[in-house]
Length: 232
Image (cartoon, rainbow, N blue to C red; front, side, top):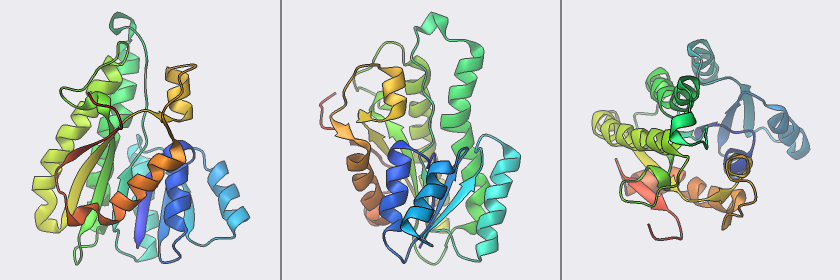
């Protein structure tokens, strides 16, 4: 099975790479702007199940690079996990235009364009699965936190995109879902909320996402599924 994971060098993405690559039947294309941790993982595990790919998904040229690498493998793409994300924690009136554009570029525009770019490579014979990693902050009716207007609204947009693509791509045998995850202890969370301790570690959330990425398309399409132990 061919699996592409973005934002794969740390946090949940890195744990996903380790877990999905543990099955020798899988080949994981681990995409990140910095692949040093991924290269180290390959050497330490002496594994052929991980292919680190240095690329910035916000760049059209870099997205084409991802396409070319996958196409050269001559294998159909089975799973795409859009995990890369960016967060800004600032009062609404202090968020600059540059910051809001950067958050939306990483969290919405890049996944949109990456899916477009990779569309011809997906396996049409069996159900392929696109998993967009969203947030509870982007779910309508959930608790919201001050300072996250840019981040949470971008995740709402990603959820809307998920629903649209599920309908549009189902005839191509591509199923699309989003996981709206709660707080997980990652570097990104620590930067946004210094001192806060999340209830879950990255490895724990990765376990759930990995299983869902492999089997969720059997049961769901176009769903935004909350993955949180708290009640909104």
